Length: 172
Image (cartoon, rainbow, N blue to C red; front, side):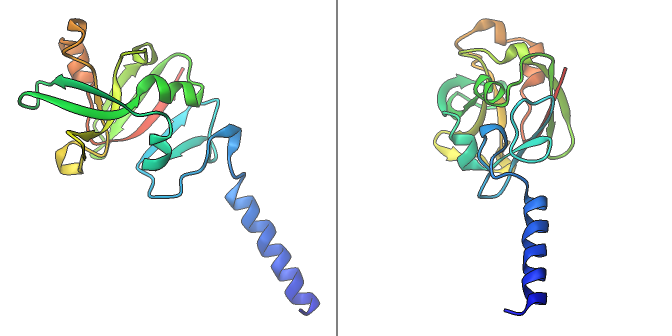
């Protein structure tokens, strides 16, 4: 290889490394598939500059759970599989404040981080064992366990149950 070619190769590798950033910032892996959830704001753990990006495999690595509940938007009881909101906030080091959740159509709700509790809401990506398409309230739907806790059967929690969720901003 000629010296000029080596210099260009070294420069390209250096620039590529700067643009790509670290492989995993603060212990969160990088997504390898299509990103469908972006979390930004006051995060202790990221995998991209000032944000955390999730594909389906990375989100599922946080430990999926299943809840069975009815909703005011569906008929009967359904099985929802997803990640506990608490698992997401714990993984990203979000300890207080508000989660501004936005849907694909820019609809937005504010959910207090205090909602992220054990046996609380999940970021559902499957209903009855099938991935939720955008047409069916996917890719993510914040589902509270309405049937197992009567406190969740109120307009406050119904209004927080955002579907077609694709962005979250943690605000202190």
